[in-house]
Image 1 (cartoon, rainbow, N blue to C red):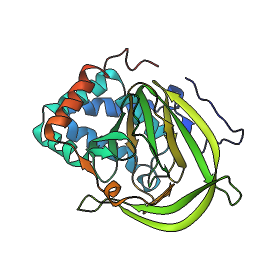
Image 2 (cartoon, rainbow, N blue to C red):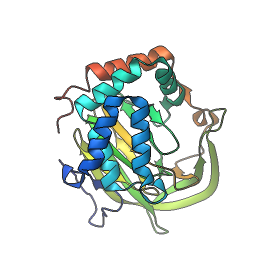
Image 3 (tube, helix red, strand yellow):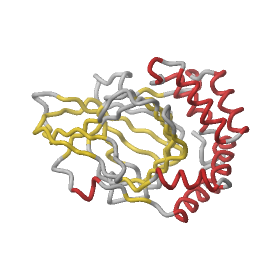
Length: 276
């Protein structure tokens, strides 16, 4: 695994690599068994595991263990095959998924009150990628199934060299639109830069300000597990006001979702594609 830091002040409290040494065998075994029993069993087991942590927020060891098992080629292949064979489950994926204006396709495979399991897919050589600095309402663990990216960790600093529009970002409502509220200008500085590649797995707590600045030259795919929200809204630092059209999710058709999952099943789930 490779992790490059551009700042000596970088802290493992903001982005931490998850390695097999951190994983919890009991949690992984429970997830492995549940996948073999079907989608409902998997959802119940992951929710139960997270319920054993304060406020259901998860931590590096637990979230890393769950995603560490779900990323395994046989496990991920079985989960995708189950989704493709279940019309109701596939319709749920379509309902929750959309093209994100930050430049990637977001597919939410599973979701309940305790967690979301999602795939992010960045196109090769995408010129549409432009991600605002932001945090999240929940802790999460993520792994790169393919490709590479660079993510920058930021922090507010009255003397910082960068100026951005300070916004709060509230979850999408029934109409599919997100709420963005502007609060004037704020200064920031970069805290660290992390370069991650296929096989890397990491944990990031809520409130960590970050920005993916380079999703790589080939298609980049991440599998991400988010825990129970612990914040009511996200922070977002933009270069300018967010256009109204960028507050509206762009959905996928049922055929597009089936094509995405089938493609992943035939390519990304192969052991060589997932090798570190």
